[in-house]
Length: 365
Image (cartoon, rainbow, N blue to C red):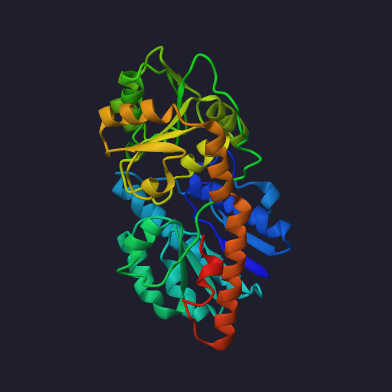
């Protein structure tokens, strides 16, 4: 197939990844090409040159609480996606895989004349909901978890569920944790990821905490992280995945502390693939991912309960964690599911009407 893959424009599709969506997009492009598909990635500047991306603008980043910057970003992204869709429309593509977070591809789908699959990676927010309403029945949807499917159900009644995968050869199994023991946390250092609560819980358990990730929100760092810094904390900065996996694999526990309804939770997948058990807040999709064989969940935002989850999860078998990771989070399985769904979308397009229930078992992970 000849596939146009639309990335979001906030961050480059390159290591060190800003987050799970960037990693998933990178894996998808690589995996589809390895299977013989012709994939054109439309992404922001700085994306991995090995992917031969169509780089369309500088990364737009996060506007946070600056309304002027938010308006500038909106204008840049609207103009850029307009240009992208014009290029797609003349590019002889079989299918569009929309991984963007912008509503313009939704609004353009019925005029584009090319079958489009949109993967919803976040809970509903106003502009994306408006895009879904504008697309009507002309769009096919996938979501990354059953929990996310439920949150979108009022707007998208038929969505395929395809869980995210990781490169199991990067997140290698470690038979034993390091001595002395430490806990590990990774992610964007922003309020909704809850690093400050991970610090507090690790201290309650008497564990040093090693953490890694980009300082995306300077104000959050100054208010919540800097005052907590001490000799029991190690800040590794923003790491590429091979280095991230090395530290994650030697940890005795991985902490996952979202303060929002996490749509998936790739840190869980990365940790268990390394054999490292997980202690997590029970938010979003995490209660489905963190099973008794690989971790424990705690009440959301409850530091004392998270300390309890750490204590219990540390005793779990590392081989069982790896086996669970191999069974549920292999990138190859994810790409199998997308290939099956592409075939369903193209077949429905050939008939002139989509049947979202058809081939659902083949495309659902």
